[in-house]
Image (tube, rainbow, N blue to C red; front, side):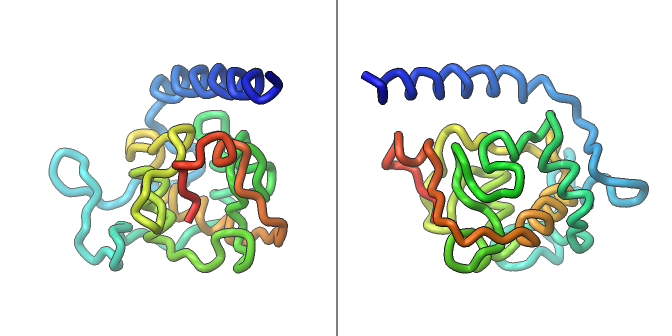
Amino acid sequence: MRTLQSFLVVGVVCAAAAAILPGCGTSDPGTTGGTAGAPTGGAGAPSTAGAPAGGAPAVMPGNAANGATLYASAAIGCNACHGENAEGSLGPNITGSMTAGIGSWTEAQFYQVVRNGVARSGMKVCIEMLPFTAAMLSDQGVADIFAFVTSKTSDVAQRGSYVMLDPKCSTE
């Protein structure tokens, strides 16, 4: 019964987050003059010219300070699931730890999770990890968040409560 109650609470929280996130503005508060948004192709699609293998567009190197601001912002809210320092909570540990986090991931692999909800294995990540469109988070913002989370380290293996509730989820 306790598991069912926890599942229902998680469902309500996720539904509330899904209702709020699409209504967020399109500005990217973590970027400053000259870096807002990435180069785009037609109709605002991210440019793939010069993109590294794996699909992440070419952007400026990530700025961990800007990434920290975005990570904790109400509009993006990574900290709500991944913890204050990316150490994991409802979502998995996404610190730069090579043993417990995403330290072995490339920026392109991180980009695929953030943009498309697809893990390195090619499987979808949990439904609670909503894909962030370019209108919600610029490509530079993704790079900045990657710089922030990989600057943190926690060697505590934390797959996240969501994954425990849905074994079809992938964190790899």
